Length: 510
Image 1 (cartoon, rainbow, N blue to C red):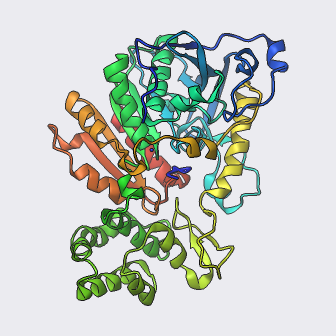
Image 2 (cartoon, rainbow, N blue to C red):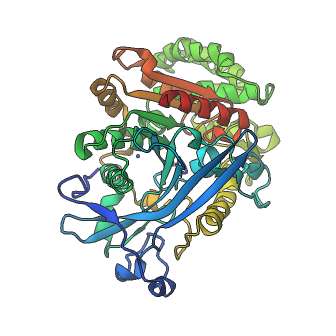
Image 3 (cartoon, rainbow, N blue to C red):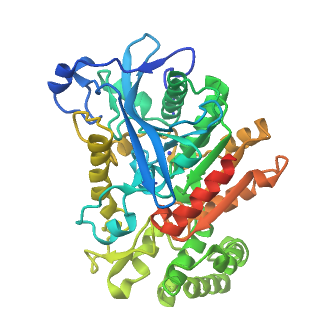
């Protein structure tokens, strides 16, 4: 999974402009809410639409007291209902909006934020990176059984943009309303998901009277596929212009991370080398320290890869250089000809210590529960501990601070959604670079920020670098920026990395 599995098509029939429409969910009778039918977390069809309504929107006012400033803002937690072309209700998509008090809504930016998966809720970014409150993710990884309280987030983006966090169907509190599996299948496709979220964004803008506001999109992981496609859908089908994209630890082309071609080895090598060097320079390693590994990856490494194992000298040279860069045992590197899949590297890196690296953050090590087994059966030590902390924090946020309490549980990371997802002909063919080309070509003012962590093996930063290098200039290369920070997939768990990302996002929106 790309996140949370991130962690990638049939067209939604048709949730695009003229054929379908959305409106906010009608306020439900409190008595009906209290006696709602059996719990449905998005995996089973609802008995009737009325039995599965989410509560009415809840609007609350807050003051966020930070070390150097105080932010007064209004929060609205609720849902937007999506209908099919016959006017039948299909799904309620939950969204949480934060709007700064006293700002001019016509000139103030608004940023729509979502995560990836498919199957991940927006809590990862909201409570880890840019929402008004956050949890200490670094402490949560180190101590998964210790509750992490919500605390004011000094790195919130609320100073310079209003924020709308969207939970795609099957995540958070979003849920199906229509009966039957066929309705759900439309949402669990690449294009169907894009059409639904784009429609929700347009409907939120209309409802909040924010159509004139500068609009930005921020997405993480699979959000690197979802985000550019949503921006294109908004501009070409919804009549909504987007000024810029912020892609956090994105997958831009699934062939880089899920394919079987040689380029996957090139994409992951610098992050594997960074994992080894990070042991000596904990918290201080920068991308500048990886210049030699990057040059080797796109130079001699690629050349020797192409020569193949038919060239014994090239194979031995590649394997030995790989071992030297990554700390992998030379004999094992030679056995695998220096061609390490991520799963193989994660186990080989600290085999003598009986530990495995994280996939989402390879600088995090955890014990291999079956060190003597030939099978790779282990959890991710950099992701698993966050599941409990973020789930608890998401409940606290909605119930205590936002006063919005749907029936059922908050779905932080839905394996069911990921399992049911239809990527089309083949998962490794899913990409968003063509959408990025169209966006840059269509609007000379459109800007793209891509941010990665050094130790991310799920969506390696060098994969994005190689993809972005293939783009034409489109007037100025300054419109595209790639930044790389200490950390993994959720590099914003590091204080300095989170602060730097905030500064870059602010500069993009000026």
